Image: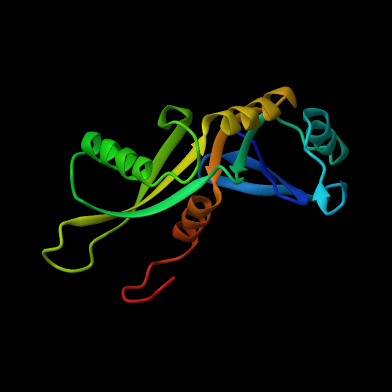
Length: 179
């Protein structure tokens, strides 16, 4: 199915229109819009502004993918022992909670993680984890923006993992090389 990709940055909105099916998309269109701003700060994005961008560029469809960004987004690199998935989820949650630098309760966070790499040394029984956490109200506000603009937000991704996925699809990891 077709998909609209949206990146709302600090000073611009980038939009791509993809056609095809999962695993086989073709770029149908792309647009970049500078955000109006005053005093060095960009104006906030409203649902009508977002839907207006799509209409102006004749981008059709409802399914969307977007990048999550903002000051409430937390990234943490962890090196943990290999363990069952159920235990890994709790271990990551505990590690992120113990170093929270923002004044928010753990219940108000949405947390996810991905395995970056298994240990390179023989006998090292650890895994490299990249954890992401965001304040629930910020995630809900982003979802509402897209819903109110007439879009069905299917994917809400964070920039570091989007870059990693993109690299994985287009490149081979070479042993001993830093990326």
